Image 1 (cartoon, rainbow, N blue to C red):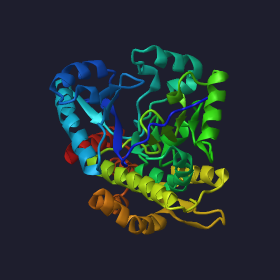
Image 2 (image 1 turned 120 degrees about the vertical axis):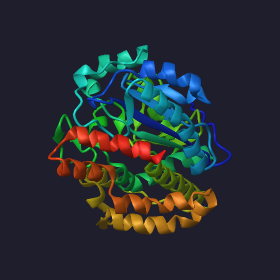
Image 3 (image 1 turned 180 degrees about the vertical axis):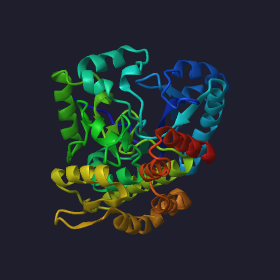
Image 4 (image 1 turned 45 degrees about the vertical axis):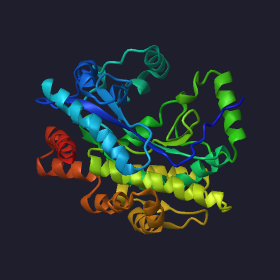
Amino acid sequence: MRIDFHASADYTLGVEWELALVDRRTRDLRNDASHLFARARPRLPHPDRLHQELLRNTVELVTGVCDTVGEAMADLRATLLPVLAAGDDLDLDLFGAGTHPFASWTGQQLSAGHRYQELMDRTQWWGRQMLIWGVHVHVGLPERDRVMPVLSALLDYYPHLQALSASSPVWGGVDTGYASNRALMFQQLPTAGLPFQFATWAEYEAFARDQLTTGVIDELNEIRWDLRPAAHLGTIENRICDGVSSLDDLAALTALMHCLVVDLDTRMAAGEELPTMAPWHVQENKWRSARYGLDAIVILDSDCTERLVTDDLADLLVRLEPTAARLGCAAELASVASVVAGGASYQRQRAVAAATGGDLVAVVDSVVRELRESV
């Protein structure tokens, strides 16, 4: 089986931002995406950049093909402002987190589309539980044969990205004890979770052929890995991050993802063999960062070196400074440190809950407010 990778001449960038719809009074989820689309799309400069998702309580904002993080954030803001205004008309707010703290899956409705119903028919209880939201960042790559090695090397930084973005500590009204409950929920779906570490594009093609032949998937986009090639776009798609509550945090995370991919690909193009870790280390790092967030002690290499993720992140930001300058996102990359200093979303949500005696409506209020204040 041949999968054509439509390589990008430059390290272009695209962002997909999933947001939930919450009622302005009850703060519960609302299945009103179709009404929001009807009001928002006539106001949008690019109506095709507002997408439906699996459930009617969700909208997705996407960018066009961008060259810089700043351009991507400006693109998203141009869509976000009319969508917020349309939500005002409907007494709806946008909520940016990995999970909703108290909504019940039983009251949620599927979006129209045969693909979505088939997914539910196959996955049953686990599929119906998927009240989760994330951020996907595409980075264009110029050479197909470097895609899988870069993807495998990116897995070394999985815990850094998950810990920074973790925003799903509460599920069904209960604090799970995890910084990112979403990460462990999502991997229950078939073909979701960590990718296999293939050395070559031909190995990936053989895997995809087997999946199609045995009926595991009908289309390539049904491979729902946390990191995956998007061959039709010529990108690596990074799907690690939980939902994000502000443009500022989104800019920081996008800059880090952009710089990591470009740094790794540049090094490989110069002849360097990229470091990778055994799958069991990668899997353990995913669990540790989902459980402990920014307090996770993670495994760094095949020698089993361990370090606090925030300490390693601080050194990583310094190492990536030249790449950020090259890509025009030095300020956005530097702002990653502000996320650590101010607390990740899961920490901020827990602080609100502690200050209000466990009031989860107040938690939703705080997440909604962060989005409004960042525009």
